[in-house]
Structures are given as structure tokens and as C-alpha cells.
Image (tube, rainbow, N blue to C red; front, top):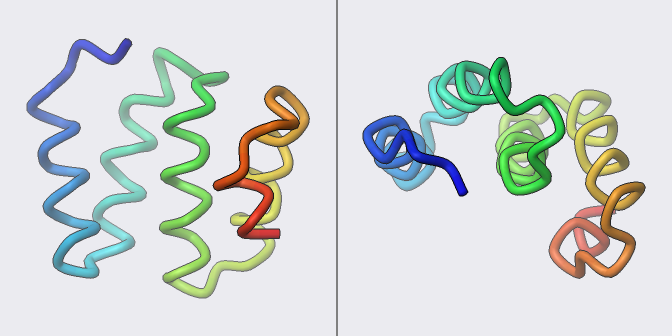
Amino acid sequence: MIKDKKTLKKIDEALRTKNYLLAIEYINTLLKNRPSDYHLLLLRGEAYLKAEFFNEALTDLAKVVEGDNKNVRALNNF
């Protein structure tokens, strides 16, 4: 579980307002301490998709599927 609720709220707000690059920055901050967090990788992969950074999205989503091959949300984005 991610303890930094303040940053999670910032991520939610950035995604809600379609500021995907800002969301990615916030997610990257959290991933520094949790590089294998599938939830964060999924969020970043989806943000990359919406920002049209397709290669980066594919990389993140592949990591999620590799670690959790039943993650329907990640599979649907492939």
C-alpha cells in the first residue's frame, strides 16, 4: 500500500484534468521508492497511452502483465 496519500491525490487530480504529463511526473516520484509497484506502473502506462507515448505505455503495461498475468486492466490496454 502506498503511504503518500498527498501525491496519490495529485496523481488523481492530474489524471482527472487530463494533465497526463504531470501525472507521469508524480508517478515517477513514487516509483523511485517502489519500482515494481504494479498499480503505479499500470497508472503510468495508462497515462502514457493517453499522452500518446505508446512505446513507454507498452513497456509499463508489459511489466504489469509479466508480474500479474490476470490483470484485466493491463491486458485490455494491450
